Image (cartoon, rainbow, N blue to C red; front, side):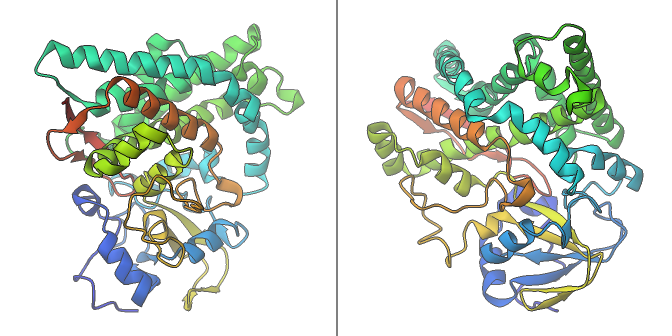
Length: 415
């Protein structure tokens, strides 16, 4: 169907759109007038040789698609809604080996193994270590600020560090190697941003570097098991554990989903606090347990993923054909006024908060949610204790991306 309320050729996955900011007014228009809307694309521009995709904007519909994998496949075209147009179909096919892009029953098998590392007990076992790390990260940022004029980049000095250190702690990566994980994940996720000058070859090479590193780690644990999660996942394949290559692709998920998304949630959370000073004062005073969930709703680090229809069906009053790509726009769903009172308001006491920032439920609900929430709570507690007087010195510099709500730089200062 046509939609005259949007500019000619408007595309919610255009990287220039997200670099300018999440298009919340356009999402609001879609929810009111065309909650499931066909967005035409030039074949090949998104890496897919088709004529476009369906934009799904309402909370109800996004959740429905997410919880019906038999109707909407993650595997057919992967979950990433837009690749660089230079990426060929063969590169897309390789990504089907990643758990994010699997369908049941294979997804069920792999997830049942991987979730051993994310039990409540496993996450609790990291808490004291990560609390200590959060404090040291903030202390180091404070020292960096005191060297100069008091200002520093919040992203590189604070937001980046705890997710990286959590991943390193979780899978037994030496802390000195965490910079490698950061560099490789950036190269995989930032292919649309010219500042990083990431070519198809560089992105593929980064992915292979992660897989190779992880496979070597897995091989070492098979040879000499330790009391860690890696050993639990790979030490005995005949007992339902991961093969070395499967573990390698699992680490890719950790590097992108666990690192990029949590880092951006923390960056957006700080920006939200400093542009809503009454919320920052409330947080410093009361430390509400609901804070992390509202930060994730507000930030929605993954703007969208996609599914592919496995049969002809109806969604939101539209006829979807088998093979059509369907875009799940979590940023829109998380601002749906049918679900959230005053969704445009940043409110760290919001409760209930049924946001879809960790996915819309179903088989692909974020396995690392508890770890992400823990990291967000720990880092903001540390900031509130040691750097309570932060203020912005400029607007954030945003990532140019088709599906990530990313911040590259956020300059702050004390006092």
